Image (tube, rainbow, N blue to C red; front, side):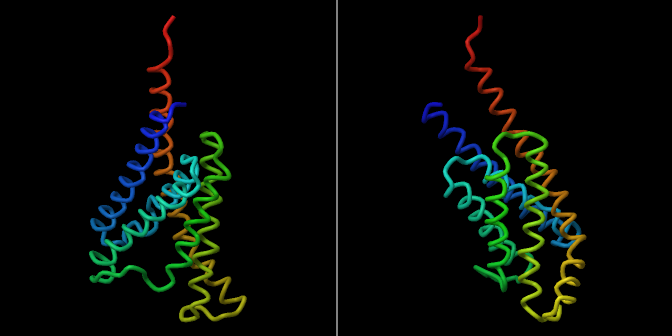
Length: 193
């Protein structure tokens, strides 16, 4: 593949992730952040970035940057009503997001319904364990016991199911567009007999 084609595709993937992050802001503003809690494009952004960029720094860095920018905007407009560069416990959420991106990178070698579905499931599991570890270790909501850890994980199940649903829906859109663009471009340059 030529460098020009690769650059065009990279710009398109970047634009798609930025657009889905913007959609996250619009959706959260419209619902006040509560109606569709965790039914968001975050998981799809992570696995799409991990799967579609050949450069590992772009694969992790750009989705992480879009998450951070959308978090900063939402902190001002919805959650805290002031600018926050980071919120308490962000490192667990961002750490989970990096691992979710790497999950997409490791599991999606070819874009198929199976690999995208598997990556969505695995990345949701990663998010569940890592982000809820942060909630549990905070110690304000759940006691720092095995029973407290289990209660924390159990309480998060409805949120994680919505995250899985969002990852599957938005992932279908992102990967569907990626497959469509790739196929239509390859058919456009294919020699006709």
